[in-house]
Image 1 (cartoon, rainbow, N blue to C red):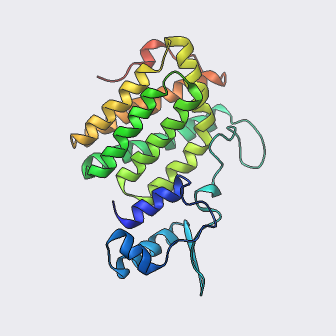
Image 2: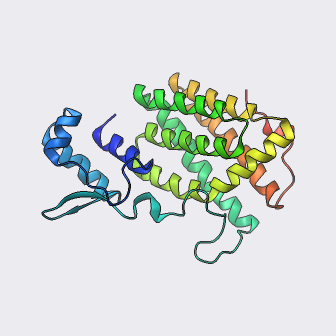
Length: 243
């Protein structure tokens, strides 16, 4: 992975918290075995994405906002600053946006087939399987999977857009997991579909990856609408993945 990609991942995953100081350019160059020029370019990319800020004479720091300029993971689904519950049309719009972003991420990841990114995706899918009996643990693993998917796509703007939507949907993903366990006994269908998404990406099949990603997002849509009483309950047929 590039230096910019690795630092971005560490920032977004909380390994480098807001306010923390990054090593100097020369230190980063040694740590990543790259030139100082490559470090400057990476820092510039992270700064343009709002993830770091350079302070004259002091160094480079993780921005206080960064990905946290969006609602926190686990925040209730609502209109920012109002506490109001989203109406059906607003939920539909969020899911539409998520489908556009995540399906594109899946296809891009399959086109690029980065070995390190694939290894992270596979590890995330395994964590999802291990957590499949716990809605709370599973939703956290699910978030990690999709962050890894965004990293695999290699586009920082799509990554930030996905984070904005995922932070709104995080709590609903947990509720959806609870509903799925009650209805089907476990989260095996979701585990399997995420594993098949990784398989499609590893096979370098953008069309198949996009197809599986679409199924995952639309299944979640059924649960979100049903759990908020905004639509009919998802049926077993809706929960089945495209084979």
